Image (tube, rainbow, N blue to C red; front, top):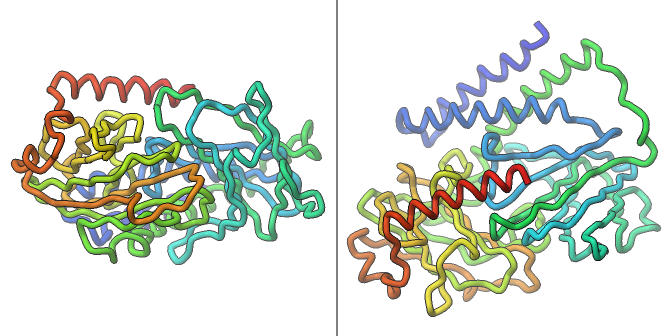
Length: 388
């Protein structure tokens, strides 16, 4: 059967989910099997989009194909490339907070992060008055300069991230092509090529699951629980991004207060993730916040409350039944390095103590009706963003 390699990989992937070390019960398994469904969908899509000679951008991850503690505020795209060809990227700059580009060698595996060969944001581009731009990536090192980026040996993937601080910001456009293959078509498919795709999709699925179950061991789980690191450069070579990370373990009567200064960075955000190392439902629940979405206290500080019980404040991050999980703060499009003073402090308190422990509790309070309006706004803004 031509589909047998994928069927075998799915069966093995189901065992990976069932045997995951964090699984404690049916809720974890149900979430894991849903995560698996998204992985199957994504890997079939990506295997069919593998085209380096007639390239195009494909969405790398999204709300139904999550992986790698996906940022709720980002749209992720990638195209496969080869290091001996020239690629032309054209587009229109939207009003989003950040637009960044990264060239990777290979892909994530359970034992290593792919090398980041080149990373930059759109400040390195010449953007015309109408918002249009053109970038070339190719082997011509003698042509390297503004608008032309030399592809190092081993370049295999071009990743683009468009990041929103305000979910009503206007999305840009982007496309990729090769001048030398424009106007031609790839070879027609045959049975062997289709069979290969099923095999590739299966390998991608298992690699994806195993990688992102191992990934937190490298960067999160060895940290003391209920703490967050100082801001540091995000692993993976992102040029202008710092992050602060940690993992929490909270009973239902406890809350974690995360206090962090409002930054001058164009993008600042916080999110929660499940033990599957993916974002929680950020559309129908407030499990993430950006600086534009959050309420800042009169002293210039954000105070986020991570808890299962509703604390009645605007910056509540909902656990959604996850007594364990990941926390990540990001700052992007930075013009300076961040230090400890720019980062978060953490305090775990009884939920009932919050009115006394939050210095501007009344300022941060919201009614149930106001909370419902916040969620309705998220849902509407997300729907518009995904179709924009």
